[in-house]
Length: 270
Length: 239
Image (tube, rainbow over all chains, first blue to last red; front, side, top):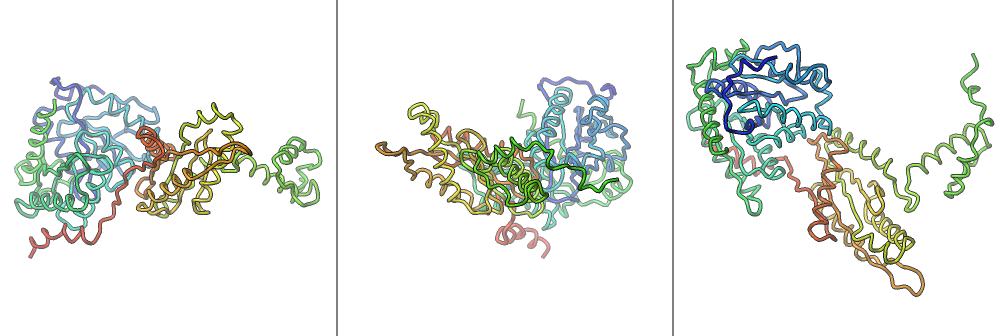
């Protein structure tokens, strides 16, 4: 596998900025958002790798309609090199897919932990962004994947169940991992401004029930909202990237907004 | 083919060393016809018991502690009940050995192990995992209870006056404790769980010893009150 398909524009930054995308609840569009955010960043000239860190129930391949011969599983079992398993995806970014057969790695052992750390160490210098598509819920694989990341993006929808699970996840991240900041993405927003409203409310509940730990304050920041859009369903059913096939729709606009915010935030971190 | 029972000629087994070991350890020999099936089973059981216990304290030894911890990881994942792992270390133990000798050191270790055993529940596993290092697995331990349990053990040990025999003043000692929970959502391995508890033990040592440090634990459960406040916005919104 050659890396020539990736836009080769070496940046001053030493290694990729690692973003973990997670969600409390499954089925809120986490993988959809990850894949399209990757495409939006790639469209802005960034070298992006999406690492399927949902080891037990990976489905990035399904979302992208890829049929990978080589996956993370093959890298773990030394059936291929890491180079061989990094595949170009539609949308101009690269993926490292977990593949089936990773269920045995759904429990975090020191071995899995070391392998993931090593992989991240090797790929970071070659990309501008590494997006970790983590599993839903709060498992130790998810928490570990998140702990490797510079930033955490929590995807939620306005549904009460999704908000509850997102809140529980953020609570754990704020206290256990002592994160000072978590970014929120509201997917399937029903009206403009809903993301801001929800983010403000979550922040208030966090302040009241979790409270700032001594000497530091916690900030939940809205990365953006992606509108509830019929085109998303079309793209998902056809297993296509929204950004490539319906670039003009509201949701695509929202995704590009997320990418712009990511770039803006990273600019502050050399 | 012979029936399976005839595969072993029991009287041909060399059991001298095994019997010697059991006698030396003061283990009860099985009350059955020597070399009968029941007798052999009894010898095997006694040997298993011997190999799972620490000779000095009678506590569970390291090998069997690791087995118990593995079982606990599985049990937590299945039952969803949180479990607490505590690791304990006697403070400045080397000084006891150096000043009063190894016999005195052994007395201290025995006294501490007894004190721990008397402080925890019968269902808890207390193990000696190193020279002056102990570990306790507390199954089904509510997360809000962790600090209380650890603190109770610490105080109990601090209150000890270890008798050094006639004419000698009794010795006192303290312990440092580190602890970490295995909540249901952490499908962890025994190694990582131990590491997390160890990290807290180092913290307890670094912060001045004679204290208990537990990994800060957050309940991922969301209370009705929290939910009420969370949904205030979305509900208003849809009205």
